[in-house]
Image (cartoon, rainbow, N blue to C red; front, side):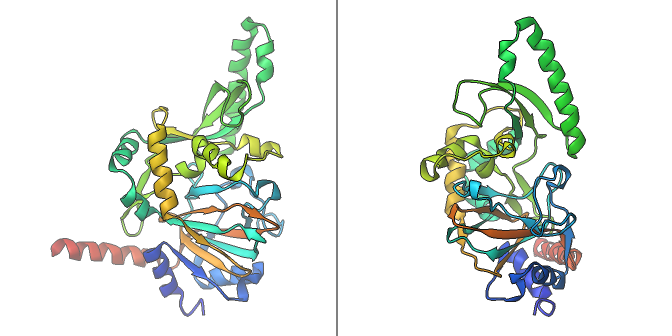
Length: 337
């Protein structure tokens, strides 16, 4: 079925941003899931987090192409906000999310069309973000409260040394330039202000042109990365649980590209428009969501019970260049009319 209908399925993914497959026994196993996307002609790529080995594989084998989604019991009350998958310069073209076991309650997979986001956002908010760009804080190292107990003449040189060593170590692991800066308090705590090092990625645009169709699409992870929006969700789902060091380190935030703070009013507009466009997809064993990572944002609802979902990332697919050529031809014909 998938081989015979591959072109039509991929065209539907491009038109609709995502395609949901239900009722197939084939994808109930990892082997069947891999056979499904191979039959479609999807070209597998490494996980965007591969360089830091942050995401385990479903079968536990090194080099396996199917990675664990966020299934940890310790993260079950964490609503994963809507986002496109990318880390620095790594952005898969597409992805396939599979359900091997559904949670007893909740755990729905969430999708939202980036084109609709671009259409529905307040134009003034879009203009501000586009003109100033956006910048993510991708990591916070909350280990340095002890520095305050040292003599002041020692603190400055020590902090400069720590920052230099940490910067060298982090930039050696990632393929984009990370800017480290000292701060106090941070997105990870409500307690008294504590020194931390925050890593910020380079500035980037919040909107991109789709690589095949050229359509403008929202490509901004504010819903998942903003510490303000995550904090607001705690009033609904409860406080985030940090039961391992990695979760505390992987705290994020978002700023304007010039490092200015984004107003609560602008964050509210982005949050409201995002929630308006979310579609909840309740997945059962063997169900798959195939999505275009440049058009479709994804997330995950809170859950109870045991959840086992996986994901494969794709750098492209067979026939993508032909789709691009057809889209260019259609544009030229429209312009001639």
